[in-house]
Image (cartoon, rainbow, N blue to C red; front, side):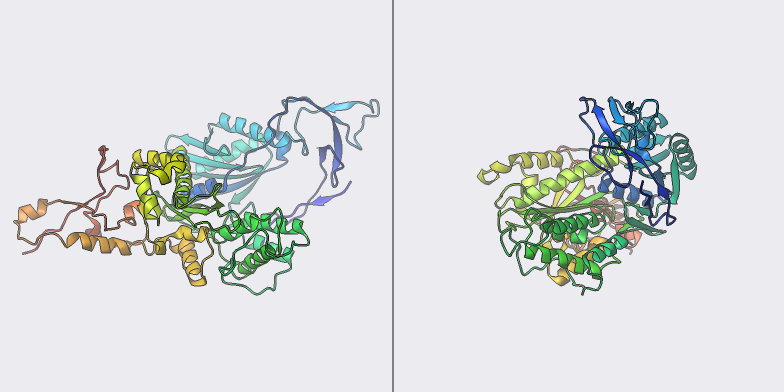
Length: 564
């Protein structure tokens, strides 16, 4: 028997353990017992784990509400699962019954090494959580929600790691005690390290960082002393599947590419570069390996970067959608990218090559992907008992895509994307989504679709991590000034001025896409008198609490009474 030692950042003390596991082949570092007979009814063996976007959404809500966040670790989680199948295994070495050495064991509980073990553990935990009053989310079955009167509790399950946040400390202690009474657990206290992610909390928010993970990755590659670079991808060269000689060790390439994928949990700035590296895992070549090394050099200079979650009262969803055009030189396919903000916090992003070759409609396909993610997030927030009352604004820098989303017009060039058109238009007509145009200079999803020059990349990275709404107020003041100019200056009586309310229909030339009501801005605003008369709905179907069949975007402005 070999001894294994388990160490982590949270538990620096070493402990030796031995575990009996079921095996089909020779297993090392364990006491093993071979499976002899397994029921043929086993069909589902996988265990769900919580999605990264769900973790970020829940943490964003908890930080904004100043809720306590605790972490719990389940000891020997897979041993708690109950088996529905008939499973036999040989007696483990060292524990053979001397009276019946030829007998086999029938398992009533799962063991590590059984393919049913992960699923059995999840079902065991979910059953007990339901007994406590938790409800599994339909959007993410590893998210459990408990509501008791005005109190709320969210529980996130990732195999044997649990994040628990509640609206009150008393409810948190009560749930923790109930879990301890059923399972052997270790209460790790306030959340500080989860799945290789370091969590630093302050009164203003929370920082999610994988700094140590990046350092370990650089150490594996022997690049701790490499020279940093400003961007993760070189804009001067396009990668192709046939350029350059094959790498000597493709397994090592795949290992680093997969490790970089995990790093994108808190580093959206490298998503596109990692996506490009993963396209060539089947036959990596030297230019592809150079890209991986460049990403590592970029990480060397940005080890302290992380994902910032602000404490903000804003709860609206805002998305940015973009696509390059035939960016892949081999397949001529485009790359879709989007990023979604909950209030001021970046909670979801993606960079993915489109499945089919498209013409000028690549932007619309990317828009459909962003809308699908927004719909999923809206449903998730509804299950978290935080439903959105206004439409989700999706910004797109392609005017044609904006027109196709809002206008029921079909022509020959849109026939082959009819499903995407119907999907987006349906969400727009229901008032759940609103598609607006944004200038390319403020298209934050651009960093997800292509390599950018150094200065532009740094600007987008800063806005994406910390300052995504910094420039959002500039078009507001410009639009308000443009709206006030056409009004006549004739003198009115004081009663008329006091009761006057002017309704102004926004002209198409004025872009109000970054108004605070639609972006969920929580940055310091101008004086209250300036915005006292400004009221705007983010949804074309919800204006002033009413739901007219069709109504253009409207600003209602109460002008202050003139003195003298």
